[in-house]
Amino acid sequence: MSDELPPLPTTSYAVLGLLSFGEPLSGYEIRKWAENMRFFYWPPAQSQIYSELRRLSERGFVESAEVVQTGKPDKRLYCITPTGEGALRVWLEEERAEPTIVKNSVALKLFFGHMTRPEVLAGMLERFVDDTQQMLGQLAVVQKYMENEPKFAASALVTEWGCHHYNAEAEMTQRLLARLRGQLGTNADYSDKRSER
Image (cartoon, rainbow, N blue to C red; front, top):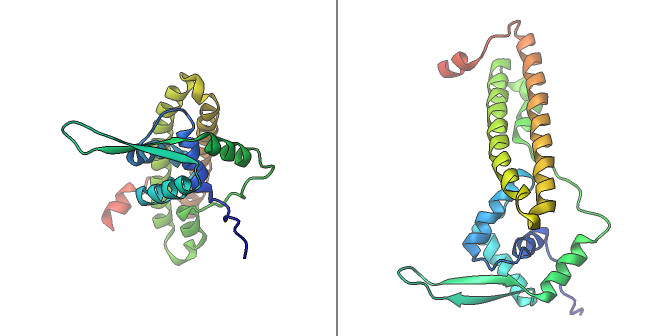
C-alpha cells in the first residue's frame, strides 16, 4: 500500500496563494480575500477554507499561532511555510492547467428557452447585463487597488483580463437580447412585462 499523499485540490493552492503575499491571515480574512477571486474563480466557502487549512497544516505547508485580542475572541493566524512556498511554486510551474469549466446558469436556461416565452428570456438577459455591469464596477475598484501595489502586479493583470471578459459577456448578451426582441417584433423594454408577471 502506497504512503504517497493524494494530490491537493486547486482550492488548497488557492489558499496557499492567498497566504503567499506575506501577511498572516485568519480563516475569516482568507475568506474575505478569496472574495476577490469571484471575478475569475469560484471562491471557497468558509467551511472549505478551514478544511483546506487543516489539510495544508498536516502537510507542513502552513503554520498557525493563536493571537490574544482584547475585548473580542482570540483568533488564529496562518502563514505559509517555506515548504508550502515550494509546493505552490511547483504547482504554478506545471505545464498544463486544469481545463476551464463553464457553469453559466443563464446560458443553461437560454439553451432550454423553447420551454418558455421569449419575453421571459429577454428579462433574464436584461438582468444578466445589469449584474455583469455591476461586477465590472466592483472589479474596477479591485483593479485600481492592485495596480497601486507592486506585490499585486500579476494579480492586476487578472483584473484586466476580468474586465475584458465581463465587457465581452455584456456585449454578447446585448446582441442576443436584440435578437430575442426581434423575434417578438419590437425593441421595447420588457421591464413592464416582467412586473406584470
